[in-house]
Each structure stands twice: as structure tokens, then as C-alpha cells.
Image 1 (cartoon, helix red, strand yellow):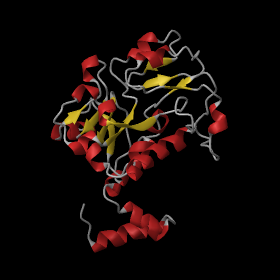
Image 2 (cartoon, helix red, strand yellow):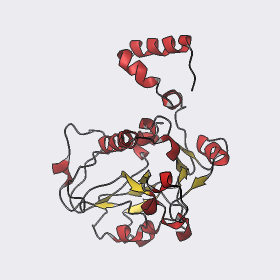
Image 3 (cartoon, rainbow, N blue to C red):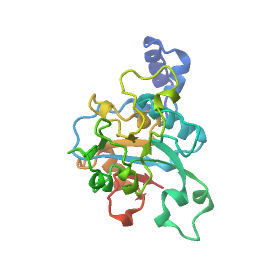
Image 4 (cartoon, rainbow, N blue to C red):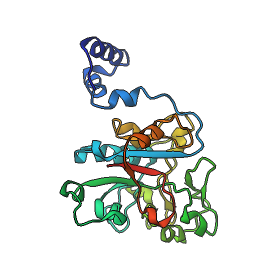
Length: 257
């Protein structure tokens, strides 16, 4: 995005008024950052969706910034044992993220690229159907939620999810949290399943999901049912793919490639 000297001084002045200093002004001027700052607050949506522009993720730091934002917001513990790790948003190689789209002529740049993945908040979520206690349920706006108090740790939802988007707390997750934690979001206990919630607690305040906010415009969140929403515009103007479409779960996370 181009920016002239007058605009630069205006933004730097705003940053100073906020007490953010010159470094903050420089961060605001990163590609995509201004667009992210200028987003209108979220209003009520009928079908929330995420569009991830994979072309804008170029370095490991681009991915980690989004992952860190999510983990910090939701007190996601960092468990060193990969078989017990807790994942709300993470990276996958192409063959794992999109096994339905394999072909022998796939560009090498794509075959070795990492992709940011999370719960797809499916239109027809199998995890909800198999949960015996309704601890996992789908809201009217499409967000698939977890009620940690109802979860009995049976892990049927993990078996039902074809995307590996759920994690089980084999050990007390509070022991693996880095201080300080976010006091506005609850920590979990041993024996429950957890996953991405599309930052429903932030949406309720008119805010965007933490990962989208940290992505510098690479992740866009909005209402699929609104023909004028940013997500609908992106999907109309770009080619997109979804994870494992052949399963019929209708994922609501789209990837621009």
C-alpha cells in the first residue's frame, strides 16, 4: 500500500498521542497493518467465517505472530510433549492440510509451504453430533463452542473431528502456563477437550479474533451471510480452497492460494 509523507506524519502523531512512540508508528505502517487498524468494529453476524490469504504468510514470524496472539489471549498452555500439546491454531504442511488436493505436478513452492490451520467451525460439524453431553455445540451464528463444565473427557469429539482441531488436557494445563495469564479468559482443567472458539469473547465486544488482528491483514473475519462483508468480497475476487471438502462438513475457514 502506498503512503505519502503527510499520511506518515498523521499516523506518527496519533501514535505519539497514544504514547506508543516511533517504533509503534513504524509497526502501524507495516504492509496490511493500516487496513487492519481501519476495520470497522464487528456487528452481529449470521455465519462467521475466516479467510486466510496464504500468499501473505512469507516467514515463520508471520505464522508465529498469529499463534502467539491466540495463545496469549486464551491462556493456551505450552506442553513440550508433542503427543500432549494443546493446539488452537497451528501450522501444517500442504499434504496434511489439504490431502484431497494432492497432485504430482503441484508447484514445489506450494508443496513445501506451511499453512496456518484452526478449527473450521463447520456448517455440519461431526464433533457436535457425537458429543454425548452436548459439551460441544453449535451456536446460531455458526461458531462451534466447548462447555468445559459439561465435558466428561470421553474424546468422542476428537475422534469425530477430521481436522485434528481439538486437544485433550492429559495433564493440568495450568502448570504449563507462562505468567502473566490473561485474567479475562478462564484457564482449563485436566481431563477436558479444548479448541479454537473464533474468539467469541472478543466478537461479543465488537473486536476481531486475536489471530486476525495480529496477521497484518492476512486473515480476514466476517459474516458469510452478508453479501457486502469483507470475507464475501475476498471469496468473490480470489480462488479459494477448503480443507477436506469431500467429507461434506462444509468448513467455514477458507484459504486463498
